Image 1: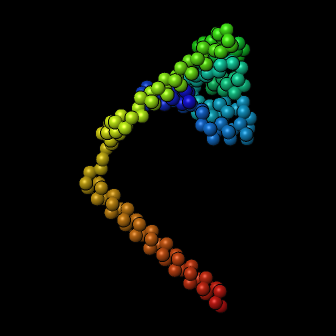
Image 2: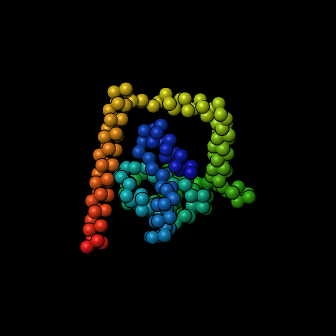
Amino acid sequence: MLGSRRAADACKNGQLRAQAFTDHSLLTATGNDLAFDQVFALPLSRFARAGDLLITISTSGRSPNVIRALECARSASMRIVTLSGRDADGRIRRGDIAERDDLRADGRSRSDEAAAATRRAQLQQKKQRTGARQFLKEVRQELKKVIWPTRQELTTYTIVVLVTVVVMTSYVFGLDVLFSRLVLNVFTN
């Protein structure tokens, strides 16, 4: 979720080409049909271009799927940023920029805490937006962004839809009559 949100922000606000490989169908299909260590490497091999930036996050630093994605990124001449746990092996930490995370005394990583804090902030933000007044305010703001059709465009679109409906209805009616006669001829002879 965090990766998807960051990719969406980079695309929308930073006007960057950004993709998070967290689609559940893609992950499941790739894991079941190929191997779970390929769930990030396969889509990355399809979308990556030389010079692109890959950002990986692995608390343990030993996730085989992340390691395979890094190998794929290196072979595609991508730039790499890795965020990993302190005990990550060398394959994870060999990014162009590599940050590691020291574990606390209780065994939790600071990246776990950061992810939890992010989730709490997102939940708090959702709680602040749940009122009817705030909802209506946001709806009004979104409606101001809509480019409404002109009266001429609306008339044209309506005519096109009506003509299409009449033509398709006539076509289906004609097929119905034709097939009903064919069936009657076949079974009455």
